[in-house]
Each structure stands twice: as structure tokens, then as C-alpha cells.
Image 1: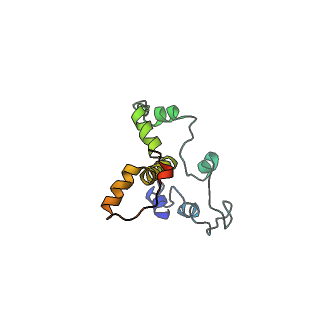
Image 2: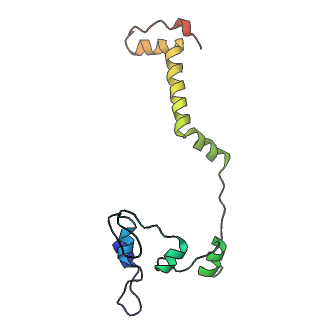
Image 3: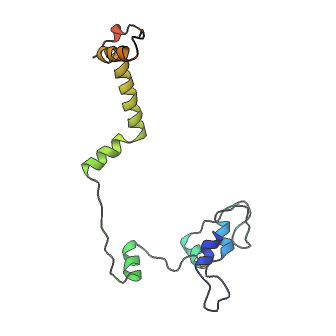
Length: 138
């Protein structure tokens, strides 16, 4: 974090860093204590006005449109990307809870369907399986 703060450069006189590297270090290390900023044992988390006060931000904007207009002089364009039905379906099927249920269902189906068990018996050298005929669900 110190290197990141130092990479922002120095002021016009070339004496002081634009971002205080010790504050940057205190943002990730709770052992660092900086007078009038934080006590030891707490990491620094600035609000927007505090970040302005300690020169950790250059400007506060009300919304993204105001920021784009000011910083990029109106040359930027905002594109809204929405998910298709296929993306939503894939996202649903890849959810960990749904995947767990699907895997459990496949295992249940493989154990309790006779046609699957017969294939398993042949492939595993006719290893004796418990008679699951009372659970004949398929």
C-alpha cells in the first residue's frame, strides 16, 4: 500500500507525497497508529469528506453522470448490459445449492433405478447390490 500511495507522485515542489503513504499502510494494517487519524488496533476507513480532508480523493460527485461529465468532458457513454434468459438459466443451474440438489438427485436416480443398477452390476463384475426392488421408482 505504501508503494501505491507513493506511485501517485509528489507535489509540485517535489517534497511531499500527494497521498500519505503511512495512511495507506494504516488502511490495511491495524497495528499502525497515526496521530489525529486512527488509534492502533483499527484500520482506517474514510468517509468521502474525510478522504478529501486527508487528500485521498480529488473530488466528490453526487452521481456517476456528474463524474463522467466533469472528468471525461461528456465523451463517455453508459451502456446498460442485461442478462439473457440463457445467462439466467446457466446462473441458476450453477448456483451451489441447485448443483447440490442435482447431484443428489442423480445419485438417488442411479441407486434406485433398476436399469441403471443392472448396468452397474455388469460393469463392476456382478458385484452384489442390495435388493432395492421395494424402491422401484423408475
